[in-house]
Image (cartoon, rainbow, N blue to C red):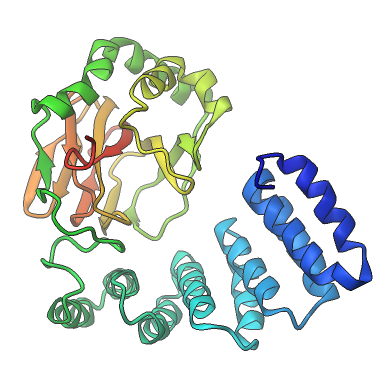
Length: 352
């Protein structure tokens, strides 16, 4: 495993899982290996089998619940979270559990249940700001702006964030904080250059992808009106090969800028979003403040409006903007379909 031979390691874990004296540990490592090296779906099935054999194993129960939620299997995930909740979980495990449970309820628009889960999360996760960010967002999505403002006030008074309109889950102090960054600055101009020089081809590629139906629906409670479809280009440190068949130039540009491109082992770092007419994405925040995000509208007959904190800009087709998505931001599109490419880069203060 340590020598980066995952498939050999998985075979050994599989053998260990069949030995009575090491079955619990071996099966757990097999499932974990599948999760990190093969895929979440295989890991979930493995954790299901593991839990059937070892129902008292709290770590397996938690992994199954979190895995189901990450796959977007919300109802199954909620049921598994309730099973895991019956175990004697550590504080760290409770943080994972309440986060997953709240997110599943949020996506199903069970706002009261999501608020209850995130409230429990704030009681366990007292030192970090991410639990408060989730609770504030749940209140906002439920329409209870008064409760959201009160929770925000409490978090600010406790020093969770330096300002009310920048509330990422993970906050690194000392970074230059502004809603929009100047794209002409030396480092950002370097990021933007390959996109600008290939803009005509990028526009052609996105139109072909739209016509071919390459995008898939993005189920999120943040969409107040309209609909969003997404095509991830770079996900969990890996190129989406299928997507790159539609976006050869985009993927080549991303690879060319990979010195500064955020290549983390979680989340989506480069994607194209297709917005149906009259879509409104409600205010939200990025998970952290260590990035700037390049946004460029590749198909926008009518420029969408992007608000970041108190600053609002039209996203004119072909024009690049850099925003700090750790600030509160929202997007409203016009009466035509709109496609926007987004790529995250390290914050210029970190890219040295």
